[in-house]
Length: 278
Image 1 (tube, rainbow, N blue to C red):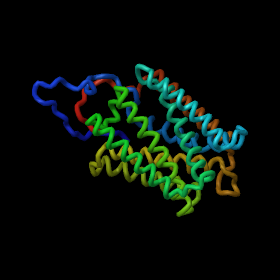
Image 2 (image 1 turned 30 degrees about the horizontal axis):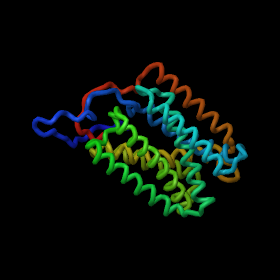
Image 3 (image 1 turned 180 degrees about the horizontal axis):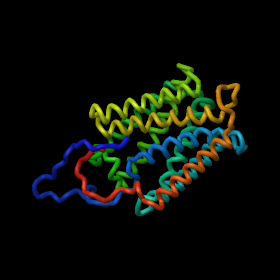
Image 4 (image 1 turned 45 degrees about the vertical axis):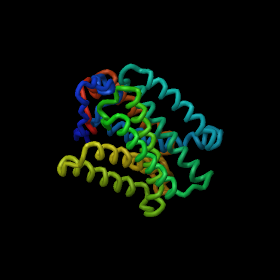
């Protein structure tokens, strides 16, 4: 699913200098292509299985692992912000770590703090809405194709974090209420994502909302896939285990990221925008 732009034009008043935020620049995030969605789903799958693996094997406890991985994520995000251009290895490392951290955080909220999934899902949905409102009020633009200033990049990663958290808790909520099993849950999320894509391409659903709805839904899709592959056969999985599943998906992610680093096929070309939503 690609994100076609819908417009919300912002016109400077007469004699007003163009806003420096609208100056042309090279976006620091990838173009949304088939490879983008492939790696995104793979990262969400790794987030689920790696979080389970670290929680069981690290010996730090759930909270300790959460703190450790959050610190690592902070380091990678600092590198991402200081990079002058889009670097696939740094960008996708941040996405994968966000997937792990939000999975651990969700487990912390549910298992240790006793927060029900309904409450956490509501809070993260409201948080995401606030991010979008503030982003638009500050930038007058919600484009994910033109993350070319520190301000826009800050809002972008805030939205990514919020969508991962929302997708994690909402996926847990659906799993508890419907109890379809891992395989059928993955099929359900895939069908809903396909419906969003169809609405975008055939019914002209706005590209911005199509992108973020799909972005949220790929989180439970990847989690259900990871659980199906890694959980024991007696629990409805294939029994591959978290080590094998995590290693397999990490290897595929690594191969795709290396390919993109060499070919630069997903690097956005600099162009001037003034008010595109997506």
